[in-house]
Length: 112
Image 1 (tube, rainbow, N blue to C red):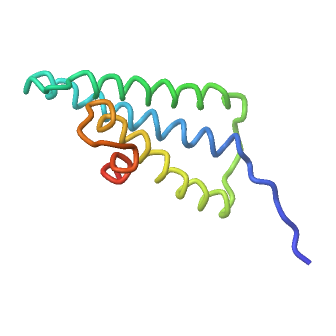
Image 2 (cartoon, rainbow, N blue to C red; image 1 turned 90 degrees about the horizontal axis):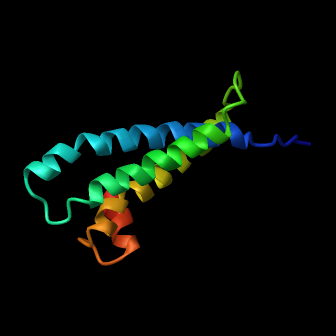
């Protein structure tokens, strides 16, 4: 007979929020080079960074009262798997906004 544990969703969301904040900061690091090279769609990187940072901030802010919790091994695996998907979705935003790829699927796999 096995016992099932509930997954601690707030800690998973907080980790995803921190990862999105980091990804958004890396996106902002590219902004000067985008304007320096006069990119055709120079707005796509800053707008994507803004969306990513705001989403990360919302996730972190909504789980702010939950300190001192630890990830279990099962939650660690879920966090890693979920982070690949979430970071690829947000990493594909510049491709979608600049219309350099025709659809979401291509943008997702381009960012992957």
